[in-house]
Amino acid sequence: MVRSIRSVFSGGSRTPGALGVTVDYSDLQVPRYGIDFGEAGFLDASSYGLTLLERTTREDAKDKEWSFRTDVARDIALSGGDLELKFGGKVRLRTKRQDFIIDLFEDVDGGLTLADVLGSQTYSLADINPTPDLGAVRAFAAATPDSAFERNDLESTFVSNNESFRAEEDIYAGYVQGRYDTGSLRLIGGVRIEHTRQKTSGNRTELVEEGALVGGVPLPEDAVFITPVQFERNYTNFLPSVNLRVNLADNLVARVAGFRSLSRPGFGQVAPRFVIEENEDNEREGEFGNPDLRPYKAWNFDATLEYYFSSQSVVQGGLFYKSITDFIVTSRQLDGSFAGIDFTEAFIPINGDKAEVFGAEFSYSQAFTMLPAPFDGLLANVNYTYTNARGDVLGRRIPLPAASKHTANFVLGYEKGPVSLRAAASYRDEFLDELGDSAEQDRYVRPLFQVDATAKYRISRNFQLFFNVVNLNNASFTAFQNGPSQRRLLQFETYQRTFKFGATANF
Image 1 (cartoon, one colour):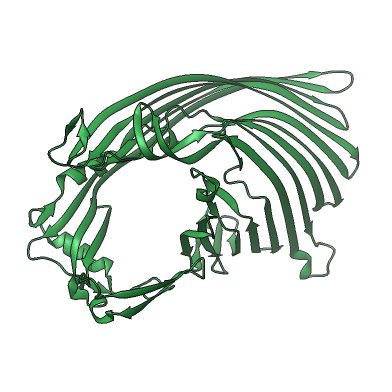
Image 2 (cartoon, rainbow, N blue to C red; image 1 turned 90 degrees about the vertical axis):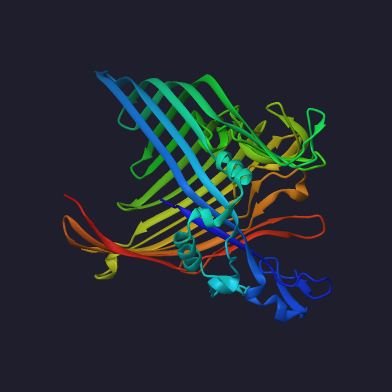
């Protein structure tokens, strides 16, 4: 079954001096262009011929997970309170496999021009016609036998092996926990031990251009070199925790906690997929997975105070601190070596050194049940978090990746009888997304403000209708670099509203 198709048409005005274009970068998000001369040739769809048809012919992806757990608890009555002792274990066995067959075709018998599959643009930010009709391209590809296409065997082999990998991750965990309760105090403490066994396999895939030196000898033609690679590792983590809750008054609760946590890197980051492209000047560009990535570990401390001023209303404030080691960031590196592979430029997920996070949070939640009907179903929730997160990596002091300094949410709702309504606005500040080889090359994502709405109506105990509107305000996504002289756009996407409606049934 064909999963996806991508087409590229090239041509247009190739004669030097036949086309003049001016680009305006004054708007960071939407650079504009204007055609000074040669517009007729530029817009002539028949002058663009098919130069690439990329077809994902097979995508075999499987992700299986088995888990087993057991818990044993014993209650002990003491003179000053109650003590619960608890211990248990858990085993999680996970396997993920990803294999692709991707065919790249560069031409077709009889040729194909953009005019043969001409469509209308869906991109609303600028005039980018002429554009192909995806449905027409898919129909043409489905009706044309593979023998009529000119397949690039070399490139097809290269891209098919780039994304393929297999990963196994087995986690064996055990814990001991004690909980002590009195009338106004609850203390929970314990330790969890986790042992991780990981096995990953993939390919070192190199596409080398004609003329590049291989073993000191110039390569007579372009070639692909594929080397299967496999990695195994084991590690054990001790994760203690202590939580204290104290009822200072009937409506005032204080909480203090300290614990050790970890977050393992995703399979996409640790899979040993080493992709290298080398030109005739022996310049090597790479994109690597990192099977030696260590899990993100942190000591966490937080304290909160909660004031319940009615049965369904609370104001809460808190402070938190995290001491982090081995946080993960994708880095752009120049002129180095990784896993025994030399490169001129490469993108690699790596572990940072240390990071610290200081922050404060505030939330307010209230159900306005004191109002007269029908307004007694109104409710509101507001929360705000300030985070100052900085870390060290590759000799640089950077903001912690994906950590916004300011985040906030506001919810206005109505809950009464069979009706449930919510309008939610969320805001997150700018954050670092990807590390470049210098501060000017770092990739950042601009702030985002988004509004969503949900409506539900319960017809019976087991049957409910729902209607959701996502991104009511058409929020956009923007990624950029800061320098050297001004911000440089890397990615800008707009999303229209998404409407979802349906029914849920529970039996």
